Image (cartoon, rainbow, N blue to C red; front, top):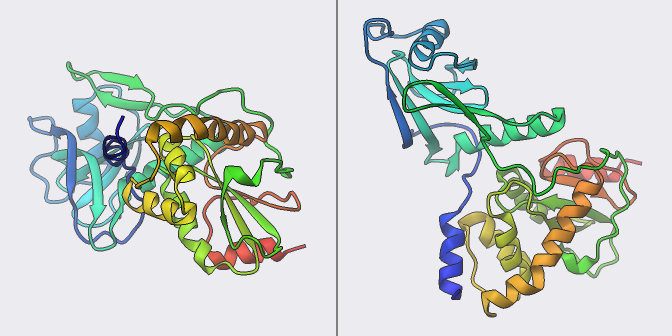
Amino acid sequence: MSEDTHNQSAANAKPLLGGRNLTILVAAVTGVLGFVGGSLVSSLDSASPDDIRASIGSVIPGANVTSVDCGVGGDVCEVLIEDTVLYVDRTGRYAFAGSMLDLHERIDLTAQRQEELERFAALTGTRRVAAAAGSAGTAVRQPAQPAPPQNDFGPELSTVDVTLPIENAVVYNGGQDLPVIHVFADLTCPYCQRLHAEFASIEGYEIREYFVDWLGRGGGERARLVLCADDRAAAASEMYAGGNVGVTRPCEECDAEYAGIVEQNTAFAQSFGMRGTPTMVHEDGRRYQGGYAPAATVLAWASAS
C-alpha cells in the first residue's frame, strides 16, 4: 500500500469531533424516517416529548426511546433509542439519523453524545446496543460500536504502576527530569483530542501519551503512523485534527514496526481495567477518576499529595 493510499484510507475513516454551542445544523443523513400518516404527529407546531415518543413508536414498534431532549439547539430534538442518536424536528414529523455539526465551532455534536454513551457503558460494564429501523419497520438490535479488541478486562484498579517503555509513547516536555503523567488515548476519540490540546498548557510535568486501539474505529492504524513519524508530537496533533499524517517511511514498514507496540499499549490498559479513553495515571500510581479535563484541573490533580 502506498503512503498516499494509506493516508487517504485513514482520512476516510476520520472520527467525528465532539462539542457544544450549535449554530448551524447539517444533517449528514445515513437514514431518514418520514413521519407521515394519520396516527402520527403531523399537524402540531411544536410536538411535546411524549408526542415524539408516540410518533417513533408508531413507526418503529417496540423501540425503547430512552431520552427526548429538545434543548440541543435549533429546531430539533435529540432522541435516544437505546443509545442510538436520532434527531426529530419540533413538529415530530421528520427524523434524521446522521451527524449534527456545529460549523462555527468546527465540532460534531453527535460524536460527542456517542462518546458520552460509550464512556457511560464502559463505566457501568454494560454493552452498547443500538436499535434501528429494519426494512419492514421492525426493531433490529445490533452493536452500535465494535467492542474493544479483547473482552478479558482486568480488575479496575485505582492505582497503576505504568511499566511500558517510554518508546511506546509520544512525549511532551521530555528530557527535563520532570514528574510524569501517563495518558492512554485513542486517536479516534474526541475527548482524547481535547485533552491532547491541553498538553500545550501543562508545564512542570512530562506527558507520555500512549495510543491504544480501543474504540475499533481505526485508532490502531492511525497510531502506527504517528509513532512512525519523525516528529511524533506534531504528527499526533495533525492526526487528531485531520485524520491523516505524512510519514517519510513506507507505510508497510510502519505497520510492521509499530503494530506490536500499539497492541502492547492496549493490552496493558486492559490489564488495569481501563474502561474508556482518555485515562490518566500519575507517575506515583494515582489514577485520575474521570476522562477529559482542562489543564488547570489536570495540574490540580497531579500536584495533590
